[in-house]
Image (cartoon, rainbow, N blue to C red):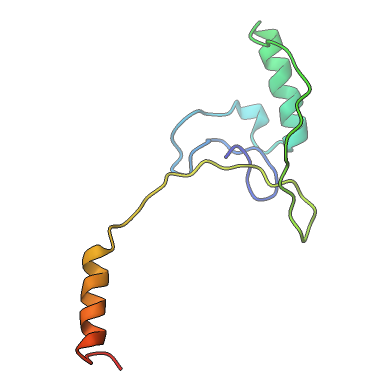
Length: 97
């Protein structure tokens, strides 16, 4: 994600430090300030296309009321078939209590 747990802009968008790098003067910026600054940078470079109203569901923390920013994470899965088979066998044979 672009923001840490306190809503500050981070240096890299990937947990391992790779990927896109955020401009240095925006690192640590509050997300609301960062959004305005990124829009200004895009306008300055002629890359800003525009802004349109869009309704969307925004996740909010039930404890603090903070907006929960989406964070991209690498997904992983483990094949559990063999492990589950061994566990079933251990239970069936009485090897486990």
